[in-house]
Length: 463
Image 1: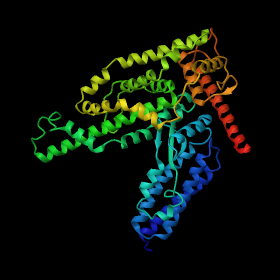
Image 2 (image 1 turned 45 degrees about the horizontal axis):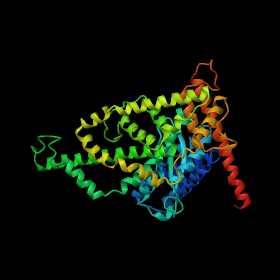
Image 3 (image 1 turned 90 degrees about the vertical axis):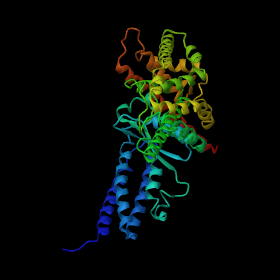
Image 4 (image 1 turned 45 degrees about the vertical axis):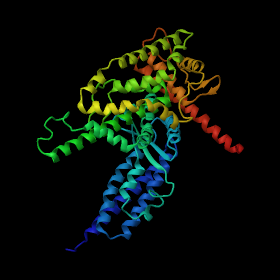
C-alpha cells in the first residue's frame, strides 16, 4: 500500500471542492439578475477561488492546507446566496432602489439581495468574515479579492422567500442597514466612562445574589464579571435595535411603522430581553418609533387626506390604526417587566440615558437620504386614487415619483382594507392584497425604467 502524506490528501480534497465551486460560479454567471451586483460578487468569488488554488499548490504546511479546506467548505455554502439572488426568487423591481439606498448610506458597501426560506430579514457582512478567516494566510494571494486596495465591503442581504411578493414589507431592510449606523453610534461612545457606569451598577453583586461572597472572592469576582457582560451586552443589543428602528423610520416614514407592527403581530409585546438576542420588548420599540412619527409631524399630514369617499375612508382607517399603536404605547407593561428583571432594569437605565440622542445622530448620518414627504396631500391622494382604479401608482401630475412614496401609498391603501379596484359592493379579500402588491411592483418597475433612461440620457448628452 502506498503511503500518502496527510497534507497531500487534504490538498487534493480542497482542490476538488474549489473546482466544484468554480463550476457552480460559471453556471451562476449565466443567470439573469436584477442588477449587476451579483455578477460583480461572482467575479469577486472567482478571484478568491483562484487565489486559494494558487496558495494550495505553493504551500506544503499542513495547518495552512487544513485551514484552507475548512474555509472552502464554508465558502461553498455561500454560493447558495447567488442561487436565490436571481429571477424569479426575488421581486425584481424593488432590488435596484433598495441597493441604491443602502449603498448611499454605506458608500463603501456592495449589496447582494437574496431570498431565504426562514422568515427573517438579515445582513451578512461577508467581506469582513473573509478577511477575518484568511488574515493568517499570505495576503499576496488575495490582493485582487479579499485584501484588494479599496475593495468593497460585500454584504449579503436576505429577505424571506415566503414574503418575496410582499413588496410593502421590504421596508424592514431599512432596519437592517440601520445596524451600520448603530455601529457608528456605539463606537463613538466614551468606553471608559461607560465601563465605570456599568461597574457601579454591578456594585458588590448582592442585588443579584445575597450570598455572592459565600464561596470566596474568586467566585464573587466571576459572578460580577458575568453580570458586567450581561448588562453591557443587553445595553448595546437594545441600542442596536432602537437606533436601527429610527434609521428605518427616517428612511421610510410611516411605512416602516406599519411594517414592524405587521411583522410582530404574532409576538409577545412585553417580553424581557434574553441572552444572545437582547431585542427590546416590541411595545418599547413601538414607543420610540411613535415618538419620531409625532415629532416629524406626520399626524396632521395623514389627517389632511380626504375629499372623496375613498380618500376619507383611507384617512379614517390609517388614523385609527395609528391611534391603536399609540394606545399600545400608553400601556407600560413592558417597562414593568424590565423593572422586574434585575439585569434588564440596570441595562435600561443606561439605554434611557442616551435614547434622546438617537434622532439627531441618525439625522446627521442620513443627510439628504431621509424620506421627505414633499407635497404629501397632493402626492398621496393622486397615488391612492390610481390604486383605487387598479392603476399602478407611479406618477403624479405626469411626473415619476420616488419609490418610497409609492410604497407609502401602498401601505395606506392596504391599511384601509379596500378592494382593488375599488367597488362599494365588493368584499375585500386576500386577493385584493395580492393585486395591490402587483400594482406597487409594476409602479416600481416603471419608476426604475424611467430613472435608468434618465441616467443613460444624461451620459449621452455628456452631463
